[in-house]
Length: 249
Image 1 (cartoon, helix red, strand yellow):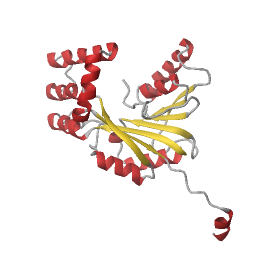
Image 2 (tube, rainbow, N blue to C red):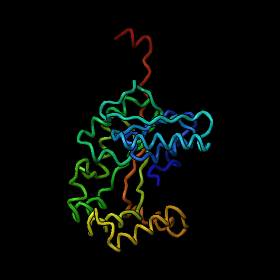
Image 3 (cartoon, helix red, strand yellow):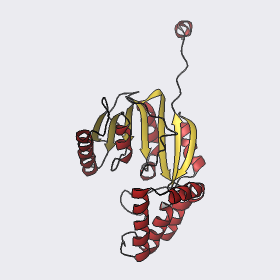
Image 4 (cartoon, rainbow, N blue to C red):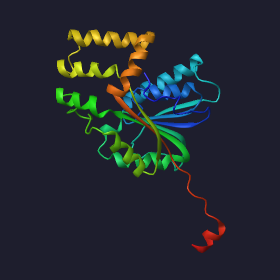
């Protein structure tokens, strides 16, 4: 289940991609399939080991085109182990709401992104997330849990402040909002509640079968109750300095 829409976020074979806070690796896997040179980074060593196994399995199965590469590694989002301007593309999906120093993370992403490079940021949407917080403290008051809820203009403002130029946004996963409301209402750890189990079966069926009816329904509902807010931005090229200007300095 992808949150980033690659029809709005073009990816070319050979692009060097950083999936920052990759989690289980869903976006990293898609970038690998599209021929990118992918680095999937997360602070969770257990998840990184699983992502590495899936990368190896994908290579063995021939799922990635020739020239594509994939590396999974542990790392700190606030101190990325890469030189300046290392990546053509950076993706950070459902991560920034967990990190106290979100401006520091944005600064690191900008540092490692090449001029002209593209970045995709996704976070839980304000409205659906507020419902979850109202229904359950356990939803967010856990170690490593969500520490803030972004309003759209707040996130876009921070992206601009970091030196990036937003060029598009949208909402995603409307069908998942009611699932999380049910989870919060019946207990986030209570997977046995009938409404939660029934809705989970619906989501699994939808993901596996991709029926037209639910695709159309989700597209219609995304602007209203989409679970995620997605922003796309570019890193501007710096103005060129002529020899005369350089000498004058």
